[in-house]
Length: 112
Image 1 (cartoon, rainbow, N blue to C red):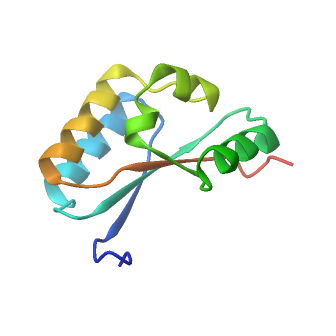
Image 2 (image 1 turned 45 degrees about the vertical axis):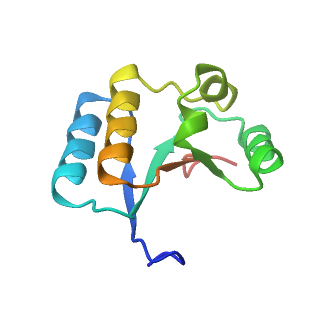
Image 3 (image 1 turned 30 degrees about the vertical axis):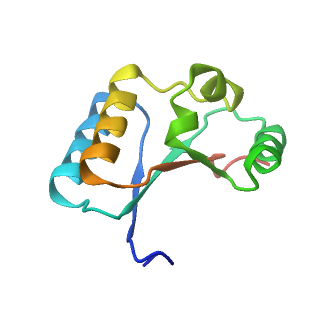
């Protein structure tokens, strides 16, 4: 459980149709008010050191809050290309289910 009492639910996303289906399933069957939905997106060709530095300098955390992630300029800054449908789903779920949705970019395991 999170320090504030809500659960942490993790979901890997790649902004595909299957990813959106998994997100909808989680919203319908798993998430409840007060939960923290952690979206994990693996970058294919990250500049790991630059991305990590940007995240930590900007926020002190490797997580990008949904409110910031929804802005195209911020998503571009971190090398993420979310689609409008997924962002709309996330914003709707966050409001309806009263969940927090930070987003965490991680480099693939083969990164140096």
